[in-house]
Image 1 (tube, helix red, strand yellow):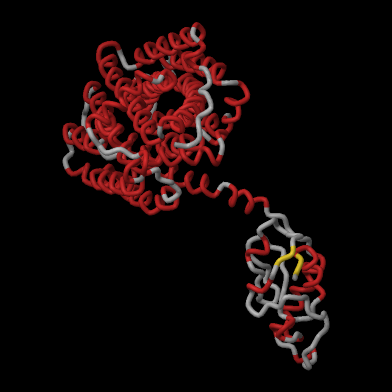
Image 2 (cartoon, one colour; image 1 turned 60 degrees about the vertical axis):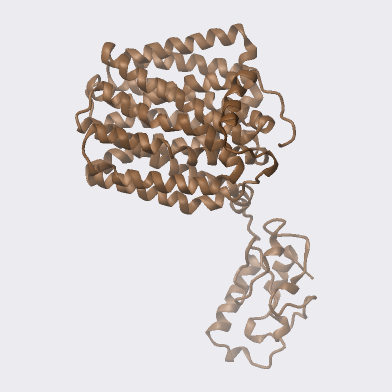
Length: 509
């Protein structure tokens, strides 16, 4: 037996490798998960499972040429030290340095092992968010370049939700029946191919047709990913509920808008859309690392029939908790969609800034949005859903009022910062509630409904924004949305049960 911490001192006392008998070539090391290069030998990985320097006995029989007991610490080789070559001198130098070197702690490696799923999931979600963020900004700039008016801009923005509205519930049923992997790959490949072909016909009507077609395949991606995350949330903890939306929005809000303006300037619209298609292929390559964690429940899966789709919609009317979450999600996504699509034209035409500065307004909102999602997950459990909802409603209403009245760049940036904070808190509260509801009534079903309600709000925000903007100006829509959130604030204060915490779920379905 070798002991991890004692083995460090014992290994330092051993003679150089060239002076040892074969049975003495058993070296202990302190590096958790692998070995320090003492004489070229490595400690088996099992020896390091309990920390950076384990004090538990470790059987070294699994190492090549290892023995079950510590050998005598005396040279057994007849050769003199003067006959040592370069290898012997380097081995001695390594062992001499080991006598004074402390056994290192490796909190980073411990963190990686503990959060391996979250880190891989974050990488996949960030790439997905990046591709969507670049695509949305590029589509807006491309539509303006093609001469689209306010009404056409509203139709193009709304078309990105048409297929989502029609396919979210069916995809949720298919995920429960077939699992998320195949659907995710199919949706990614088809949507990427359409993005690559989109610049072939430079006309607003063709752009509208392509964005509509893409919307039918996007639910295969995010409904699949949402289902896996809701299942894994029971393991990683509700404090990490904001990670999914946070990593996705990091790419969509922080990186995507800034990158899109540069890409369209350097690569043109054709090159940018082809690069978007390549990122869809990248998500296909990363997806098995995340979607392979999904544990299917075959007994609860149902076939894709019209009656089952109707029963999913009826669930909204029957479940009060689910209905309240969906109403709030509808309002939040209305604001989010309008801001994402129309803040660029507002910045260009109202504030008189460049396309790059107007695209940067999305990043200003994204800063506080991402900050809230990653850092305020524990706030919901500590303060309670009711107070978090009241605070987020008030912040969002005030931010929308500022955005609706501002005529300069810096007030628009300030409104974006407040809006990101309010929507971020709102998303954390909603995600924790929807995950608990999913554990009770079925994750695939709830993911499909959630995916239906969010884009419905997005369609409302973008379509109504285009119509209101054509008649009264785009900024007026911010004032209407501010009044909507003021109404939600009043309703929440009068009926606290609407935003009360969801009861703890029963065991997994």
